[in-house]
Length: 301
Ligand code: FO1
Image 1 (cartoon, rainbow, N blue to C red):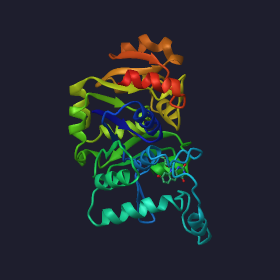
Image 2: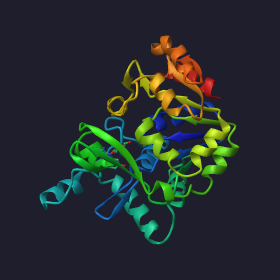
Image 3: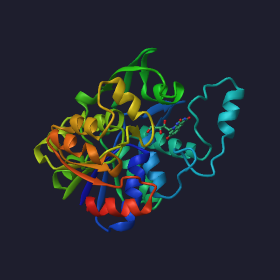
Image 4: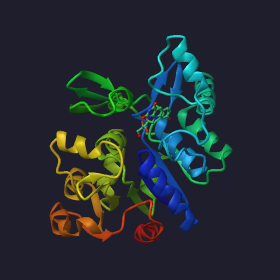
C-alpha cells in the first residue's frame, strides 16, 4: 500500500495518473484546512476536488467543481442580495447538501468522504486527515482571513505574514490515517502547496512524528523553474522567507524528507537539494504530460 499526503488539484492529477499504472492500494490522506461553512453547508474543497477528478467528473477549465456545471442558484442568490463570492454550482450543491445532512446526523467527514467516493466509483481510499475542526487562517496585510477569504475573495493577492492551523493542536488523526502512514510501503507527498496544503496535515498530532520516525518520505516538488505548478505557492513561499525552488521545499520538509523528486528544469539545483539532507531524483514532473507521468510513477513505485 502507498500513502499519499494530498492537497487538492495537484494531488488529484497525480492520483488519477497513478491509478492507471498500478493495482496497488493507494490511500490518500487529504487536507481539510480549506474546509468552510457557507450558507450553513459544510464544503470540503480538497476532498471534493480529488473525488471529482478520480471519478472523471471534474471541471477542467475551472480547476475545481464539476463539469457541465450551471450557476442558476448563485445568480438567484445574487439577485436576492445574498452572499455569492464563493460560488457553489447547481450540481456541486448536491454534494454539500448530502455531506451537511450526514454530518448533522452524527456521521464523520471520513464516513461521508468514503461513501461519496464509493458512490462515484472511486477506487482510491480517501481519508480526511482529521474528522475534527482544523481551520487554516492567514494573518495578512488586510487582517485575519479564513483560507477561502484569502484564496477566493482576495484572489490570493494580499501579502501574508503568517499561516495558522486553528484547532490542529487538539485534533486527532481520522481513523486509519496513522495506520496508513505507518504501514505504507511508501509515503509520497503530492506536489501540493507546502505551506497551505501539506503543513496542515503535519499539524495534526502524530502525523509529523510518523514521518520523522520513518525518514523515507518522498516528495514531488510543486515548484518548477521558480514557479508554482498552480496557485499561490510561489508567492507565499517568498513572502514567508522560503527559497522559491525545490531547495526551499526540501529545506522546509528537511526533518522528515527522504527523497525530493524535482524537474529536469531544476537539475542544476540537485546538489543544493541534497545539502538539505535528502536524496534528490531528477525527472519530468509535469502532470499534464503523459510520458512524464509514466516516468514519475515508475520512480514512485
Ligand atoms: N475557487 C474559486 O476560485 N472560486 C470559487 O468561487 C470557488 C468555489 C468553490 C466551491 C466549492 C469547492 O469545493 C471549491 C471551490 N473553489 C473555488 C476552489 C477552492 O477555493 C480551492 O480550489 C481550494 O480550496 C484550494 O485548493
